[in-house]
Every structure is written in structure tokens, then in C-alpha cells.
Image (cartoon, rainbow, N blue to C red):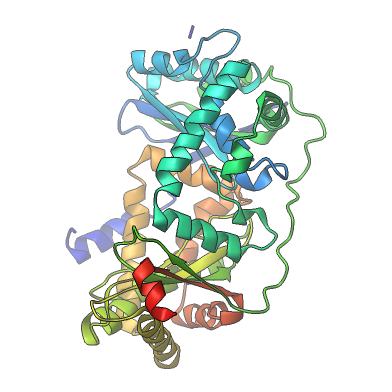
Length: 446
């Protein structure tokens, strides 16, 4: 068991529009959804199982349990001992891993196409037959606490991000860190993990995505054989999360730490996500992020703050609309030597105000449209990237049709739509502004 010339690339874009890959879908009788993405360039494939559960779906007081269970999924089943899953994948020339977000948890193997059946057998085995002892739970809990210690508690930037995110969402669970709050992670036990696993790790809460050198009919047949017999979780309804109340005033925080090497200012605004059948606003915000902060040499913030006034050594604008609920649009500035955080923030505000008054340079807009179009085409070369695109989309409320249509939605964005989105999103009443500084800088302010 177990960068070519622009003209050439433009012709290429016209010949191979993004989204041209062959997609096949099916649904098993037990509710498991399947997506097959054919790509026959090489005899390899990616097998992924995505669960519609993440850190934002955890029970109150049990933060970190989604990530905790991700770790425990490698401990073994009734057929495999601890670590044997990954060992078998490696013995067959493949690699495997997993990841947790607020909206999903996903497991994947990248291996030769001929090993598809084995991967399904392995993954189906641990979907319903995971075994975990008290010692497994205790050991992995300590591993996660040490992971939090290394990646968050000993990193002032990570702590700052954690505090800002908590300030952004007063009620919605996006304000809770994926790895969990230390005191709650330390209290997670065997029964907590088992209850979470039995409820959410079920075929009617899962999406199978297979991408690469595979035959859709074979994928469906194997899925029916291995995943089909698994029992669904009864009564598993829609994902009902606490709603975020309207934000009526800007929230601000300062975070000082002796370990901070480079102070900076960051502001994030609540922003809409990509919605099924209505992705245009998210597409406009995607352009806005590129226009303002995509390239230091040509972006609005880079040109104004890094080159014209030399106020900053780095600027950024960022947005990712792949989210089940409201997400954020962000701006950041790292001030140049001798520039304080207050002056840096004021310069950032002036640059944004000037942009809202001046509008978009048409030449820059067309360059960015070209870049976005090219990026969508290049993304077709990665079977794992394609699989992830569909997995993220489907677990955050989009349909296969939405995901396929995204490149066309992006290509249809107009400057007027971008400016409309900018005026809407840049509302300080819906923003969190944070200063990361050294302790000496904080003392000087007092």
C-alpha cells in the first residue's frame, strides 16, 4: 500500500489566454468536490486535499487548534505509524507538506503522475482514520509552542503584526493569530483535537484537486474508490462566523521593542474581498496596489517618496482579495535616515491625497495591465500554483467559473474603476495605523 520582447509577449498572450487549461469537476455521493487540472508538459502531478476550515472557524477559546491538527495529521492512522505517510511519499520520489490559513487547511503531495492512486489511498486513510495518543498531542503541542516562540514571540515585527491584526478585527476571528494565542495553545488537549478533527475532516467539507499529467476519468474513478466510501459529517452547515461591527473611528497603536532595527509606519484599511459573481471591485483594488506600490522605481509611492522627496527607503501597497470575509488594503513606509515616523506618515498621507487629486497616469496603467496579464500567463506553468489557485478560491466562496474568469475580470478593469475603489477604500475611519519603533524612539516621544 501505501522579460521577452513586449511585442512577442503580447502575441503570446493573445494566443494563450490565461484560464485556457482544461478543467474537469465532479462531486462524489458523500459530498466531496473534485477538480482536475490537466497539464501534460511533464509526467508529474500535484494531489491536494483542501478542507473548508481554518483558524477563523475555531471554537472560542481554542485558538490555534486548526494549525495544531495540521501537525497531528502526520502522526499516523490505523494503518500507518507516525511519520510513515511522508516516508512513503519520499520513497516514491515525491514531497509533501501542509499549511493552515484563516479560511482553509490544505495537504498536498507532488509526485510522479503514476503514483496518483497511492496518494489517494494515503490521504483518504487519514481523512477519517487518524490516530493520536495523549503523548502525540503533548509532544506536538510543545513543538507548536516553540514554533510560536521562534516565529512570533522573538520577532518584534511579527508581534507588531499580531497586535495590529487584533486591532483591525474587534469581533471577527481574523483578529486571532493562526498559530493561536500562547495561553490557549498551551491548554489544547487530546479531546479538543479529536472533536475538531471528527467534525471538520470529512468528505463533505473537503475539496480534492489534482493537477498535472492526469486523466480526468481516472481521477474521478480513483476518487470514488478511495474517498467515496468515507462517511460525511451530518449536519455540517454553512460557515457562520461572528460579524465585524461597523468601524467608526481610526485605530492607532505604537509598538516599541529594543530589537527593532528599522522603524516603519503601516496602515491597513478594511476592504472587500473577491465575491462569487462580483469580482470587479477586488480586481480594481489589485490594480490600485500595483499602481501605488508595485515597483519602487515606477509606482506612485516609490516615485514620490523614495525618489522625488527621498523621504523613504521603501514603500509598499498591498492587497489580496482571496478571502472568505472582508480583507484589508495596506500601505507602508520605511523612512529614510533622519526622518521620524510622524513625518513619514505625513508624507505618506500627502502622496495618497495627491494621487486621489491627480488620478492615474494612462501609460503606467497600461504597463501594469500588461504586467498583470503576463503574470497570469506565467502562472499557467506551475501545476502546484494552479492547484493552489483553485483551492484557495473554492475554500473562500468562489466557484470554478469565478476562478477561470479572474484573468478576464482583471483585463477589463478601467482607470475609473480603480479611482472609484481608491476613494472608497481610503477611509481613515476604517483604518488601523501602526508605528513600529525602537524603545529609544518611544522614550524620545514622551
